[in-house]
Length: 214
Ligand code: G3P
Image 1 (cartoon, helix red, strand yellow):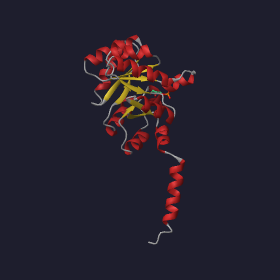
Image 2 (image 1 turned 90 degrees about the vertical axis):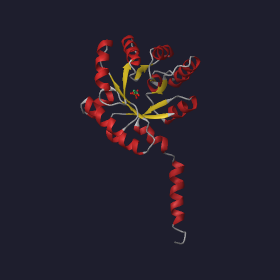
Image 3 (image 1 turned 135 degrees about the vertical axis):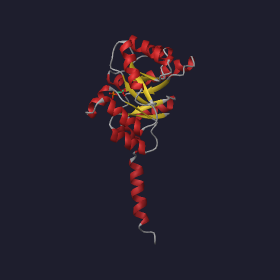
Image 4 (image 1 turned 30 degrees about the horizontal axis):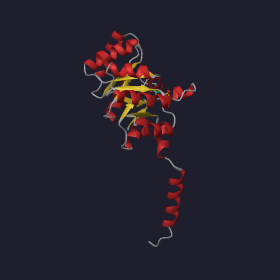
């Protein structure tokens, strides 16, 4: 499973990239707003650091305007992926962009039929939001299982990008289900590495090492 980082914070992106395990980045308007910097500048900075796919979201709600925005965003760098909302206009724009060979990430997916339609529109990635479903007492990861089954049944190329990840358990379940990508906040990437027994074991080894004659 590929690891994307879900942030627009360049320091977090640099740190995750230094691990050598980062495959891409997803941003959204809320994450960009947190940086306090202009949208284009944020994306240019990210694309200088990360060579894998970098999702940039359109904010227009009408398909023609989405396409105008998408074409401008695509000029920033070769690895820009256009993120579009799962609406009728978003699907129309996705269909057009996929016909032009532009990579797309259809976002704000909360149901299996939405994911099916995004795949039919030719989306490169579908982003189901598992954490936000958990928040309203629906099991987000069940949606991932449904989408993977549907995509597998019809041999869709669209990759399932597990989004709104809130904990390492989401990531573990995503890998066990065979999701293609998870976009993970920096804090959760750090949690994936950590284990108290690793820290304890390392401390003991280092302590015992002091007893070894040098
Ligand atoms: O980038 C979209 C998604 O990952 C947002 O996550 O935590 O705001 O639900 P969250």
